[in-house]
Length: 319
Image (cartoon, rainbow, N blue to C red; front, side):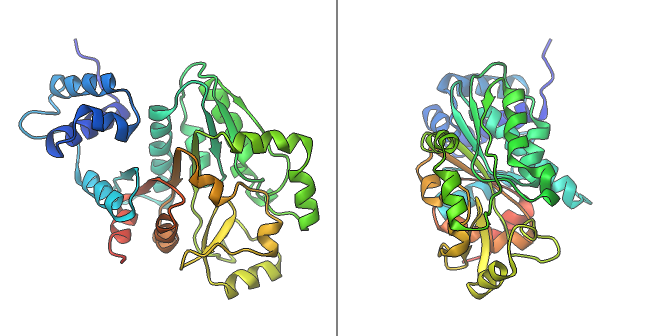
């Protein structure tokens, strides 16, 4: 008797079958691209036939998103892309939850024992932690990549995210006991040179995987930054035409990192450090973030993107 496949299993099996039968990749190519063992690829191809996913053509999954994934990979030179299909009448909360589900499925797929995994903070990353089921006793370490948000956004605090990830994956976590933006460079430097923070920075230098959100343009009514930034900060970002942020570092539409007083007061891993991590995953969606996502992908900071179908389609219309 065949066991029923869950959604994550069916998606992985179908994608492997698509890459093997339609795109012509070898099993070795697929194992490298998806960061899984070659023997796993072979077993998944057997299951693709066993569960009638593969006959003459691929059945049982809408492959429209796979074409979008390949187009985005080629456009930005990414290692991997996951595009989540949009459903009719989905609310924004539903879309964010679906993105979080895809994120945790991907982490569960690629994580290996003993690895160090970093997280920034935000709604979708919080959703990832909420939907995590994890693997047993991986002995992995989960680390904040930024300081915490304001009290108004406490539910998305990075310490809560890494704590829940460690608990569900059977690992350990590290905390950052300070806000993302400090009142002065002196205070920020004092924190980052303290004994406890030296351990955090050591983890930053040895990360295997990073999951980060991608922020869009500042919005005074809804932005998660409204309780962290001063009026001078906001004016400066507007003057510099900030289009978005990653790990609390703002950048312009031209891909210029906005340096100065705000960045000097910010507690976060640098974008340059993110470049050196083997697997760096940006997870974000919505039309308001299209320009920000497009710019960050062109900056070559990240090598993996998780987004939704409508955002992917809009990204592909940009030059």
